[in-house]
Image (cartoon, rainbow, N blue to C red; front, side, top):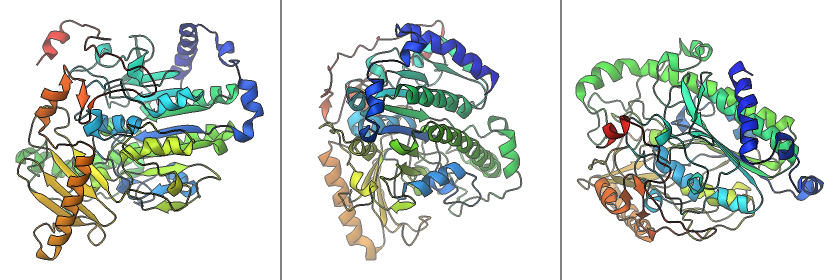
Amino acid sequence: MPAITRHFFSNILPRLARLRGVGISALMLLPHSGTVMAAAATKPPNVIIMFADQLRFQSCGFSDPRAITPNIDGLARQGMLFRNFVSTSPVCSAFRASLLTGKYASSTGVVVNEMRMNPNHDTFAHVLKAAGYRTDYIGKWHLWSHQAGGHAGADNNFVPPGPYRMGFDDFWAVYNFGHENYNYSYWMNTPEEIKGTVFKPVFDSNMAIDRIKQHAKTGDPFAMVVAYSPPHDPWAVKNCPPEWYAKFKNTGFPLPETWQDVPDPYMDRNTEKEPWLNMWKPKLPDMMRVYYAMTAGLDEQIGRVLTTLKESGLEDNTIVMFMSDHGEMFGAHGRVYKMTFYEESVRVPMIIRWPGQIPAGSVSDACMGTPDIMPTILGLCGKKIPAAVEGMDLTQIARGKPGPEPDFALLQGMGHTFQWQDGFEWRALRDKQYTYARYLKDGKELLFDNKNDPLQKRDLAGDPAHSEKLAELRRKMNQKMAAIHDEFKPCSWYRDHWIQDRVIMRAGPGDFKRELGETIEVDTNYGRIPKEPEQKKAKK
Ligand SMILES: [Ca+2]
């Protein structure tokens, strides 16, 4: 363990214990650990959710022989791979809000990045906490912010203990922004910054490992999220582990087959032609090398967590999920980054492992999307799903049995990545064969046959032979949107109707109301930490 982390734990853990009013030794002897141990046979399963940031399905070892991800591949061999899983709103914050709540972005109100989530949702952490679980969150939160850009420091990163932690109340080591992997900060239970300089996934995994060991001692069931930062940009060589970069130094990364010299005009950033040709085009191959190196480095750290789980004797009774918040285009269709319905952006790995319960090495083609994760977690744990949840419980599918599954995944592009700029909104539907998409600004429709054209080279929307299919998918998408109160508005409409000072006040279905706890009044000044002069500068 690197020195910085040893130092970190010797300082932070006793401090945390004091905050909770108990010593470290008492933490391990909390009530009912004995009875839980005795009832090991019927013990509730633990849940560990590990997810990457920007890792597409197409760049994992099980899908690309160039990738080095033995631990992610191993998870897939030991569990179920959902090969049609899509990130419903492929951008950081929207994904995270859906993951926690089981709702669409149109119902969480987290339509663009860099806002503060409304606390009046019931998350899987709330449900499991009420059932006696310890709930831990480590890594990137991205659901607390008061401004777009310039968001370093406590005001946009320190989430005070309480309702805005959405039920993750036991261990909290979080940041909201930043993808510098060797120079970063975390916040725990005070506004004090905790700085780190080891490869960031090492920092995350060290904390996760420590928590697993503690949970193994107390015997309490736990649910833990580890939200890793790689392989998100910046893809500079200095931002990835040098030993892993060396492994990819001579690997070929040609431009994608759907590369185009003209950037996609529907893209929210990077649409200037000059840098597209003179910066992105020549640099993409080496950016991909860094991306694959970051992913390999991340995989190694995921492996350390899985090894600890095994050595702690908790492997058999722990549901492990691995996924990513969205993918990466890398030049396909004239685009970089995410925020679009194309395969490289929405398809991400989704693996669930639970030895003896989920058939090892199985593959599901269910049309699973982000809102289905939360109810599936609760279903696997045998817990009641709150009524406001919009996703589907895929427990039966995960157990390898016939069961209900969605006919298709609805995809929502609610706006710009983080600004209130109109013109980038789209909706799409993806079933086991087709992707149908529609832009808001001009009504342009696209249709791809993913089965026969997996790279989506041929848009069939204008093909008379597919006009019936187009109409059918259009109708299904409109029906689904109506059912969840998704009115498909321009991005600025959401700002004007749902949001106050980047704090979400309501969303498509109306005011938020908790089922499992007290609905609280939202104060936009709550938890703010004024900082001069940045505070003034930030006001747009
Ligand atoms: Ca992300």
